[in-house]
Image (cartoon, rainbow, N blue to C red; front, side, top):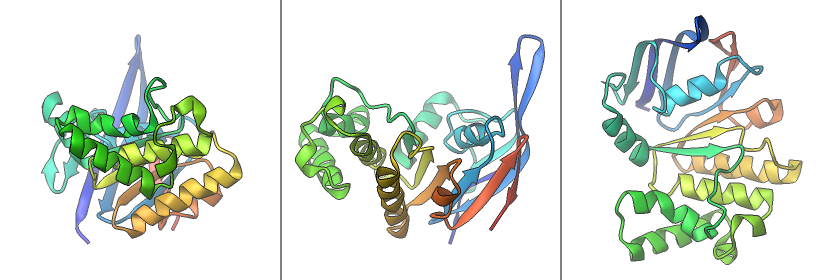
Length: 225
């Protein structure tokens, strides 16, 4: 397997007035194409910060971020946004769907921003909703869907641009156990299909879905297995 993204000596320090708050303290991490990694740790351990760095949503204070061998730490915001849009899909605990849009139109949004024509957008969105088991619900708005169904829409949206990397931040946190298990199996199936997945979770059972686990504490990581 080839290395998809790697971090070298990455630190992140947030400034709150005159106070410096270290969130990451010299993290080294190499993520191979096709990996399925679970990040675990208590609140404030740096999990979300690390996910934001991996997703190119935030810049490190020091250290390097390499995407397929290219140092992207100093890229301009527009170039980073372009790379995120085509290579990385995000799944959030709170779904982050547009409430006034149907499931299909929510899935189409990333493709709209990329300039994909209407007919191709609709075809791709319908195909993805079928893939996550919601083809018959594509015209429903988020309020008409269960939590598990909304998370499936969010996953379909994350897949719209056919990204290489899927970052899932507590995707089962707002779901019942049955819906949560279905979402984890869906992520595992995507990984078996070749997608690289990083899952942030507090749940050891959810983490057991992954191929390997990193535990975080005080901005540092170590491998569990």
